[in-house]
Image (cartoon, rainbow, N blue to C red; front, top):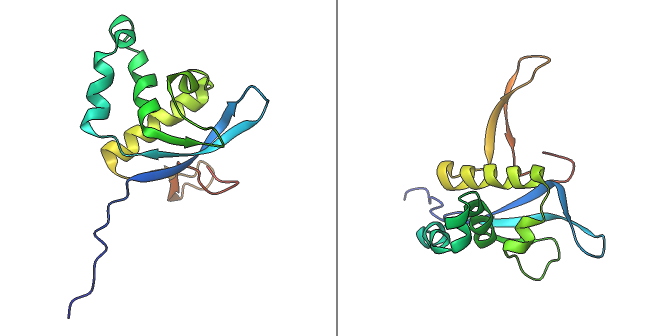
Length: 130
C-alpha cells in the first residue's frame, strides 16, 4: 500500500495588505483572498477600452477579477482597486505574480544582520507577520 499524496490544487491565497483600503466610513480593510487567474481573467481586460487608452489600467482590471474578498466589502470591482494605496497595489501585483507564475507565496530572504537564509510568506496572512 502506497502513501497517499495530496493532489489538491491550492486556488485561493489569503493575504494581509500592508496599509489597507479605507472605506467611506473610515474602516480599514486589510485581510483578503486572491484566487488563481484563469486564461479568461487575463484575456477579457484586453478588450476593455480603458486598457486600450492606458495599458497600465490592465493591472486594475486584472486584480479586480482575482481578488475575491477584501475585509468586509460586499464586492470587489475596478473602483475598489483604484482606491488602494500605491503600496497595496504593488503588494497585490507581486502576490499575483507569485501565485500565478511560481505557485506559492513564499520568498527566500537573507537576514541583513546575521546573514542567515530563510523563507517568509509574503502574503502575510498571520497577524504581526509580513
